[in-house]
Length: 212
Image (cartoon, rainbow, N blue to C red; front, side, top):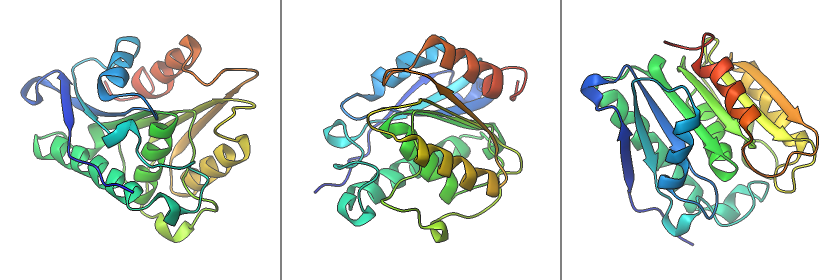
């Protein structure tokens, strides 16, 4: 088992010229530079981009549906790394209300788990194929109030890694914490990010419905 070394890649605008910050979380087997390439398809404007890198290119060793203890200490270490990225943005002068989270697959699961444990009014969040983490959800882990934060969750209807029932369960938890959740399920979509999903993310989270 492992913990994560702190590796955080910054891109986009400098903090002095940014009006928002986006924390981007890569999927299993991918990398911080890989998820940063997604920014070309998102309307992020003058955003500071922060992409943590997982040690061994994986945020935790087993499925997100495994018992939480099986994924320790990697999971807690990964959540701490996301927290450090968020804190870094805020220390650079970006308020939580202008802080966004974007993740794919394992990174989407990590993003949702982090914001549900630290619910407050954020700029928004996008989970491309992800759900909250654990064999069963421990609702005691989640708290705060999103205050209407827009959250988009997308997935295929029969994804091989992320079952639809957990995505729907996760959406309910987030709504109960005050998030404005949009859930979009695509029939037959492979385990990838489609142009339709990035267009929807721009509309729901980064476009006219999100912060300028």
